[in-house]
Image (tube, rainbow, N blue to C red):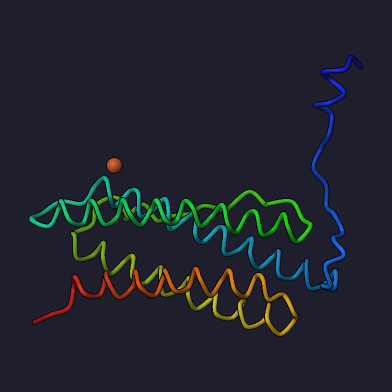
Length: 165
Ligand SMILES: [Fe+2]
């Protein structure tokens, strides 16, 4: 093997950081973060699709708002993936899934659709954040709390759009 090939021969593998966490905890939290990664990637894709297809008098503000949201979600998936790496495991390939009916929704249906997904994300993240703190993984706990703050503010802003007079 020549020198160039040698330096490029490394493959990623699981590590065992001695950071004060049980291996079983690192594995359990990493698996849970993998699920959050998939949910966030799915919501990112759905938000992007809604950004493209939204129509109606509120096209411009919704189009811009959804752009802000998919950009924030894109940053978030990187945070989850790199936390899994820091816990010693390989980042899984996200399982991305959105229903085909997301392609042709009214503006109101889009907002309710996104509210439901953000709320589902926050519910799952809350459970994992509590579990992470219980098992001394306060870094994951704090990371999730920061992300939940963003989701909850996003839910507020989406709900404000569809609040009836
Ligand atoms: Fe765009």
